[in-house]
Amino acid sequence: MRCSKAKRYIDLKLDGELNPRHLPILTTHLSACSACRAWQADAAKLQLILANAPAPEPPAWVHAQIMDKVHRLDKVRPGFARRFQLATATAVVAVFFSFWAGAQVGVKSFNTQTEISGIANISVSTLSFGENTLLDSYDSSGDTNE
Image (cartoon, rainbow, N blue to C red):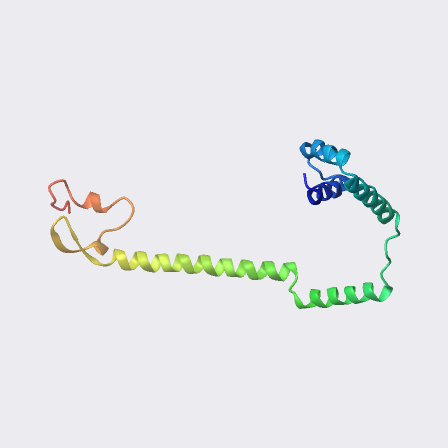
């Protein structure tokens, strides 16, 4: 193993993120390389110093500035209720339009003159939905039952 790879493994080991299958390879390299052992000792000292260091305290004006920006953004964006109302209205309009368009297509296609079983220009609009269907209007020979 090269020292550059061993240093990456050392850092991962100190952070507790080293894959367990790489640990024997790292141990073998550390037993043979004094430079990497020194690197591991220095990295462990640095990690200990950073862990014990006090967390930096941001100035009070930073908190006030962040909260001011948050409040301004909340005023610009619509609230949850307003967004929900807009989404509902859009969905209702889309459903209404689809029903209306479907009805228009259905009425226009039902009222057209069609050619059924070789009989030309029989108006389908004279037939009704429900119990009477196109199949009920014609017998098997192609003559109408009316």
